[in-house]
Length: 218
Image (cartoon, rainbow, N blue to C red):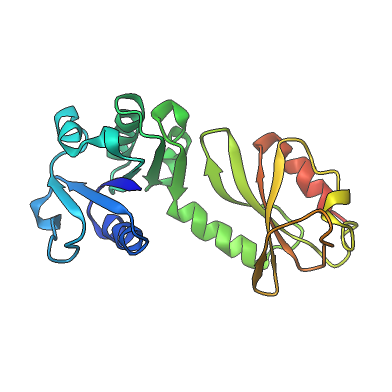
């Protein structure tokens, strides 16, 4: 997979390291010459350019990328890069970094964003996930398809405890994608029985989240 990353700061370089270790091709784009660290990541491609300019993205060959990541520290830049990547170059998957929570509402498919990653939201979600039992915790928003990744921990007194996954009438537009139990990840199957303390990960439409949470209420 070929991935273009706009922004070669600490965040962009960290993402590049992970992707390179997983065998992907990575192109880092930044207009600051001090961030072009070829010696640090010799396996990556580097481009000294402004990712908000069409001529720069032409030079980067963005149309050949499977994924574009807008990882700069400027939300305006990330939105412009996302829009250009999706509308001008047809990049199948566009991921954008949200620096300021007040701007999160802008990071949607209208701006070409498939997945918006907000560090403050992720941190608060992880805190909630650690202390919340029976309450829905929104972990990630998928702009494309209008769905969220949400987590619910099954309380000991929940009516679903002991039920098989296949017997539960989950809300429409909701999919159980994983069960975390005793530190292990389980791929859910209809015959699996739900146990108190199970952490259930769903992809769900936002308007179904309340129905999902009501299923878990005692």
